[in-house]
Length: 147
Image 1 (cartoon, helix red, strand yellow):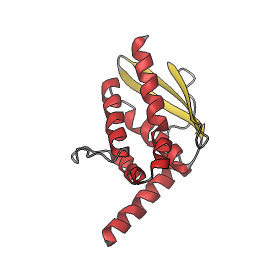
Image 2 (tube, rainbow, N blue to C red):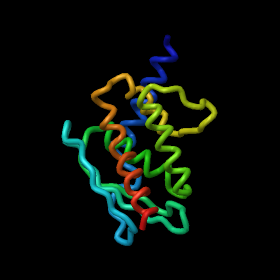
Image 3 (cartoon, rainbow, N blue to C red):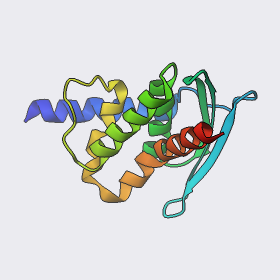
Image 4 (tube, rainbow, N blue to C red):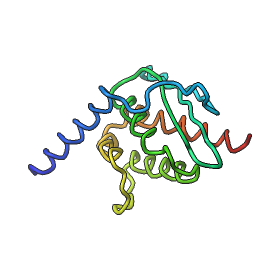
């Protein structure tokens, strides 16, 4: 039991670290694509800009306002997809979505800091907060493929 409490505390620290010191915050001036999304239920909003070159996410940044879950998730997402092929980024988004729905995920996958958001699945009202940036990324990458 103590190890679960320690793990929960570690996850909270990781989430708060990304919230207080977000990675990849800002706007790409030369971004190839910009997506704006919001969660009207709670007021979270995000603007995601990214640059895809030869099918690889070269850079990704975000701006926005929202709760610690929403902004931490955006920070973690941008960090996790940089340098990945578009298909890999979309697959990671699917894995994240499954995790948020409480589905089993491959334990051999190294999700890095993203794993800290696993507990959000226990709070249905917060799932949309955690998935906002991921949905924006999916939308942007899918639209980018059609161009």
